Image (tube, rainbow, N blue to C red):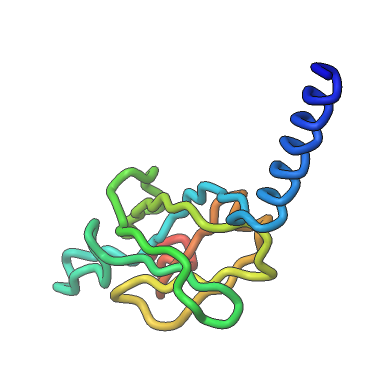
Length: 131
């Protein structure tokens, strides 16, 4: 009788785990990205973003799936540019991901592989490695 109960328990656990895997939330991936913008204090123009600018992540349909803010935890690049980092968790499995940064125009799209490798967004002359 004990063997039958143990076998039934094992089957029930297996079914529960299978159902949880099918109906549960998708796996999450941690994305670490960088935003680089022009920074030319002599021109009198402030950078278009700051370390508190919001970063919004969308799915292929444009639905918001995550958001965070920029931080100052990014390696600095070329002269007259300023880089900001961001870290956010998003669900795996979308065909593409859109990233919008407060202060910049438009949405930049990335594949899942690009998101895993660390998306990089640039603005203006910062896209050319600075001035």
